[in-house]
Length: 351
Image (cartoon, rainbow, N blue to C red; front, side):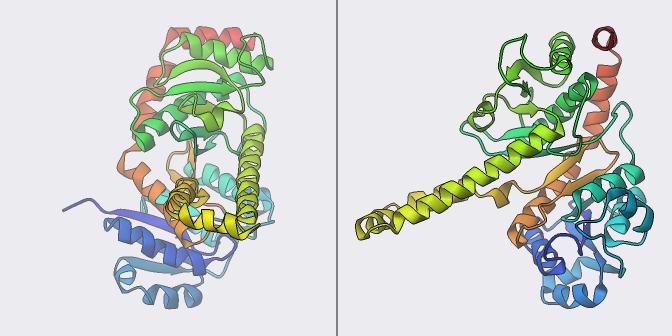
């Protein structure tokens, strides 16, 4: 019998709550019958939706709570006053061993604060980072941090490189991923001191990836490296710009197709190719940012995602559990922290 993986779902998080989370769970279950679900939230809204999906109902349970973390609630307030919220109880389920992973589309800051407080960081990790896949010309690129840490020092960037490398191994099956630090130029003298210090450390230590040096913004969509490391401020800006450009191009393309009967005819003739292009660049398929570095699997879905997008986030969580991501990170961290070269390089960077 295949192992079953129980996923705790913050059913009230995001822009649409249970109306998206429940059908998303049904879609995820159709892809992976080993999944089991615990929905946390308003049972009077959740249960009727679950019952509409007979297969899902057989593998699900609902834990009622009326408390919800709003999208604009400050993390400190949410941490202090949201002990019985759907988000907090879903995270608690992972901590207590009742679930293997938690997925939420709720307030990012609150989710990060709660997850870090409840699950704690893995030994050797200072702060968690949000990692996600970026569609790229050559291969999908793993990028972190996507918004959890506004500023980072050299040691944190080195930790992100390790976390991202193991993530690329688990998600994309790359034995030794290439890693680059995002900078304003590829030359060694470019950028802030902490970027150059992190590059020096990664050049001289052994970790699960292969450090290729600095990369620039256009290297992200080009897929120049498998893992792009940056601080949360820069990563989040890059993500939002990419999403905006993608939407702009899509809208412009639709407008061009409607500009004349001949253009519309050309679009109809190219329908098959356009459909494949849309599928390969669909942002919903890349939904699901993993909070790497926590002592537990926690995945953040975009708040405005539909059921298909949220189901992709659920499947990301299930894959990380199935592949033993945290266990593999713990092994690699122990190897890194035990290297004399790492300790000496870190001391040099801090001096």
